[in-house]
Amino acid sequence: MKLQKIFTLSNVAAESVLIRSPRITTNRLVLRAINTSDLETFIAMRSDTETMQFIPLPLINTMDSALCWMREVAQQTEQGTCLHWAITSKEYNTFIGTCGLFGWQTNHRRAETGYMLTKEHRRCGFATEAMLAVLKYGFETLQLHTIHASVMGRNEASLQLLNNLGFCLEVVRRDATFWQDCWHTEQDFSIKSDEWKEKESIYNAYH
Image 1 (cartoon, rainbow, N blue to C red):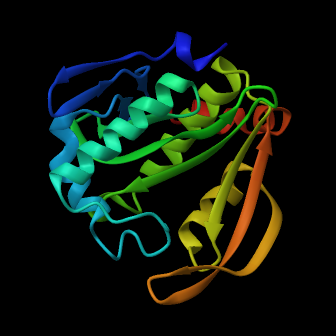
Image 2 (tube, rainbow, N blue to C red):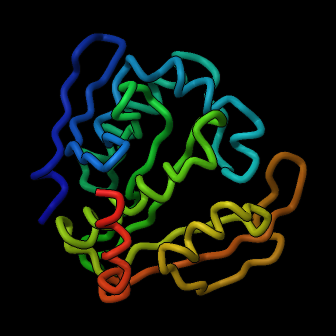
């Protein structure tokens, strides 16, 4: 199944872009399309150096740069190479982070995954809940064979999360990334569809 058949996008205003994503509901979360009403909180998250200490992506600290990011995501989604969700609290309908599948390679049925949460919503199990939903969608709906993730070696929380989800360590790259005036070791992980099936019962506890 190609992403182009699942996602469409359209200009809703001269300064904004609407990205349509499938809605996924878990016990406490709703994963939905990112929209311009999320951008104030999104900017606060993406401009925070503590939040971004293990995520080597450009800081986003203005509305213009956030809208530019949305347009890039929309273009990649239209091309069928990525999809993004806003992670929102079901109880309060509040934006608390992002997650997605990126760099989707159709021929090889593989993609990369990642997530980001606002500071006040960490250590609550939200990342696990969101990532389980992403894995289920990737393997069962998109029929991916392998999902990859890359984590900096000092990011203990994400390393533990991937281990709990059943990802396997593949490669360690020492001092591979220079970010925020520091060298970081990168660790690459993957999980295959058959390995996911062994962990699927964990998902049922969150769904």
